[in-house]
Length: 356
Image (cartoon, rainbow, N blue to C red):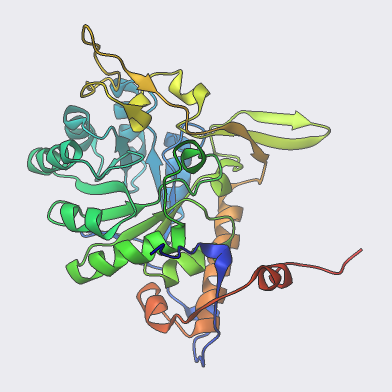
């Protein structure tokens, strides 16, 4: 039997009887087992979103910028030190088996290490995760996964799960490989295992609005990771572009040809090959062929101004959703949530219409 998978546009949340004033709703949340955030927002570990400047700005607003790894270890260590110096939580991405890099970043001041892999459910990555936990002080967030089985296998070692295979706006994994799980179903599946074990879940990808964030949190996620919604921020490192008097910023997936050409994060989307070194560049072996499959695209997003303005809008939308369903805290959202599946007509009706 073929199972039905749902994503954000397939559902709405029913309003509930509520005594919650949106202004009083608390958006504080768990990032991982031993760290909390004032707002449930993280930035994607993309080299056109999350550098030290952006991470500091988002950190001061209560979220976390996850420093990208499409650079040398020395450059990433310096970014970690800069963010730590600013007095905010530091998150950094590492390759799926890059124990040495994880330890170095932890020692430099990263309090959370993110295994950055398109599909983490593999024996070699589980073994590397166990070694990272043994050798470093930082919390370990494992991703990306989308199944109950992956959550069960990684539960003994993970301090949080990052969920999503192919939902991102600049990701083509599902088109290239035919593999993935619609994001709402993926979050719910992982949460069904993680919740009982006290492991927070981060919904990574497919989020285009504050309404999608509300749905992800109502499905049981503790926080969300955003790429395209943050890529247009003034503080994001993407190039500022003017086209027909309109401002844009460049944005690319880490599986795009342009990102892969930098060679530091090729192991995120790699078939075959060997364990990467701390530089992020996998050593070659005689007779061994490494295949890099492009699973992302590059483009541009509208320039959206300071990150503070973007965060204010998103958090306002989250609080509005919490008020409608009667949830005073992020944890309450999944308890109060009543999802209804909608038709294409229902989705059309949900957007502005009948205007000229």
